[in-house]
Length: 373
Image 1 (cartoon, rainbow, N blue to C red):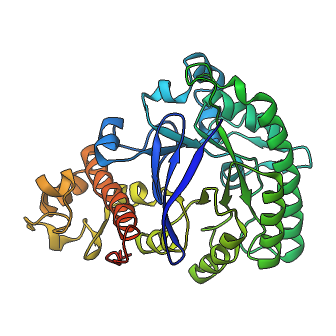
Image 2 (tube, helix red, strand yellow; image 1 turned 135 degrees about the vertical axis):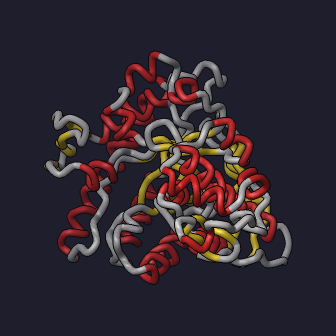
């Protein structure tokens, strides 16, 4: 047994559910903080727990390069290595190979690339991605795919789609043969990791439909929509999501990868997306951008130099309860490391709070307060 997914309520297109994974039962729709290298940047694990995060992401590409998946396997898997007892998802590494490696060669077999750390050469195949993710031991793994860039002409998008489909089939076959090798398999009474397929196809609706339908025939544990937020207009992102979601099985979790701004994640959740992730809350925080109920706040602005009010008057997070805008601006101006931590905690609380309100709104006909980008 891998995951169990149950829908509790449906209002319009939106749905509230529970996703039972080996390490944690997750309330959906859910926003998942991104912990690229085994850490959500600048935020300790106990703080994430206090904020109510039930599932975080790990990045296969980065963890494979440093410290390596085999050392992590020998230490009992990624949960134990980073001291995170709750649920975890790992991506396949495909997006990072696409976005970070200047020197890469894609063949039918896989992708050869050079490390962005030291220039060393590596070769990722679907089978190798599965082996790395099994060693890491996240509750949810992703099939190895090729992310289609934007813009991409139809010929390029079609070639990328065919590669992704072939790799999805190989990923699934290898996963099913080796999923019992996860470091914690015996500890959880035979429960296994889960594998999600990723819908690609660029910005072509018919290619997306073809990809989704073929993946559904393969019977993955869940399905993701990838290849978004790669430079396309926001309207196009929404169009692709709206096109693909109805094609995915109602009784399995639906995940949109790498999105988005606060109002976007609320909108997507109300369309029936169950899982989302994005680096934006912490990345923006490190540059002094806070998301609040009053809109975006650039805490570096001079206007906040003597502002004794909280970062967000409507927020009850641990940062807004204690610290002023003036203090957060001072930390930013002084280059203090605490600046990134406090800003990140607030932004994560804001994102997690949006999902909490959406879930509450899906219990009744009451509409949640809209988030502001």
